[in-house]
Image (cartoon, helix red, strand yellow):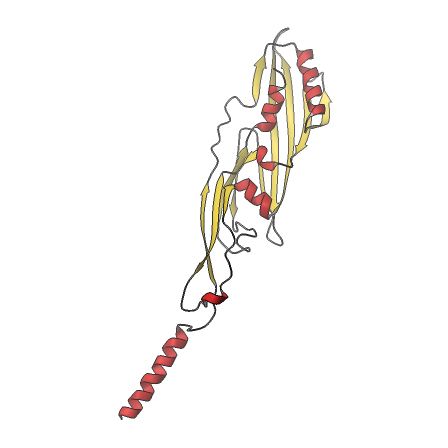
Length: 225
């Protein structure tokens, strides 16, 4: 009877160890991440009234557009409308996605063989837009409509309204698109904060907000000073 009991106890122990995955390799990856959304304050950043004649303002705008990152798509002096397009190599100069931190870690369990554990990817800390630029295929397409209005012989109002289209894609993961105008932002639910950092592992269903920095709008307005 005692012998039978010993055999039963032995097999129960083996079953328990097997259930715990003793000696079995299993890399359990998880991520620490922190996201801080951008602060958006558009007041007085894309419209201005200046003490200059209409013709002088118009000439300055055309000259500035031809000498900078803008391309002139269309202009109608009689109606005071100038349409410019722009893209950017340094995307974060034009749009703000807040700050982002992510660190890949491995959870140590009985299923883990420490000698076989891969080195975790280095952590990322910086602007969220820079993170996407580094680890995904990104593009920024911008179009600015400038309306120049004559108030009187010595005063002119200039309003700039830009449309931003920011796309991000990595591999076969669905393309993410943020579309917004001057004075507004766009928020997209991100299923994956993908990148070489995390190997495409799931760390999301989270909202990511992107806004203008107003660099494009201010470049136009500051050229009139």
